Image (cartoon, rainbow, N blue to C red; front, side, top):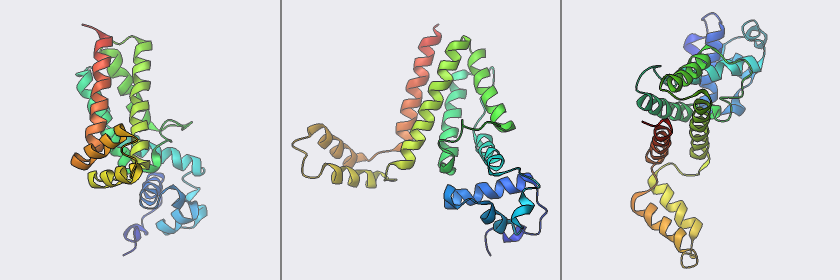
Length: 218
């Protein structure tokens, strides 16, 4: 059965259109998303979609909001370090599920309700932990820069498994190991244990949170 065939007789709604667009883009990348392709997926005429979404930008706002809805919203007043760590881990996981969203999360001019809830919760978590306003803004920006930057790196580096990382390192250094001893050391290390994205991400996240703790003071 073709993807979406079982729901083609369901009435159109903005939520159904946004969910279908998200699934289509997850499967085929951002270049696969067009109003015509989406209409075909939904078993509808392209013009019928415009009764529910104003244009493609409106659709994209909704899709980005879906991704924000999958990210953990920190509990305001909870243990801030634990809450922000869970937020970071869940954000990376959501971006792995929706790699097309990397680079788009903070660009929307009309963010949806999930985005508002998420941003309010994150800022509230920092403020209620005792961070002054300006320091809370700095901390929030640093967390997002790290998370989105890591997600972009994870998306673009051409290996997925530890074994592939070792092969890439060998190919990159080639026979020049004696000229570049520190690169050769990387090859040996990756060959023995590989590159673990989760380990690397969580090391950096914990390092940042430890720095926030020192900033907050006793």
